Image (tube, rainbow, N blue to C red; front, side, top):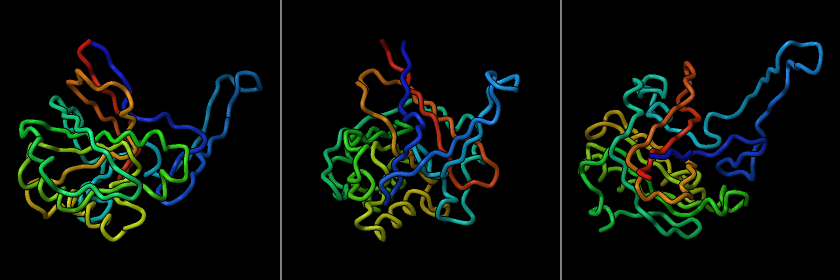
Amino acid sequence: MIYRFLSHLLTEKLPAYGGGGHSLDMAKTGSVSGEGSANIYRFSMGSHWGTHVDAPNHFFENGRKAADYPPEFWLFRAPQVIDVTLAPSEILNSGKWLESIDGSKDILLLKSGWKRHRDKELYCKENPGIHPDVGMYIRKKLPNIRAVGIDWISVSPFCARPIGRQAHKAFLDPEGENNPVLIIEDMDLSCNLKGLFEVTVSPLRVEGADSAPCTVIGGFDD
């Protein structure tokens, strides 16, 4: 058994939806090499920068926030990976590929290979997206799935933001059919995912925040 990170390291420059990149503001406030007794840092960043989870409150005032979920929710024991090929600004539509999803799975990871563009403006401004019908299908037909993870910046294509907003709502609406399906965006799925048998998502628990940056760890049969 081995474990791998499925989330990106937080670095000084981070890609952000619609922009070429944003800075993780980080300052050293204590140093063992100076007058302090320990190294201490202060940092700030947007809640939707880097690998992060979108919870229902992202679009719905009556929706749950990331910190509202119990710890067991974030433990996924039945992941499924589906490879998808997506061109810039392409929208992943519903289709026969949805029939390949195993109804017993609890998290769906869509691997597109878009990490190769992560250091380019293309990643932020010409990203692919997901059609709202996909979210509606998963909620109606696959109620065991609690989360969907993607390896590009957002389910909302920057070139078609109205469709993207509807896609988020299709997954996250607390009044929709069955339970909301949370969205994990900007994952690192570049490793060999063969043998993946569990996924643990650890969102930063911030009171009042709609969503949160998160660390994702995959467990693999070696």
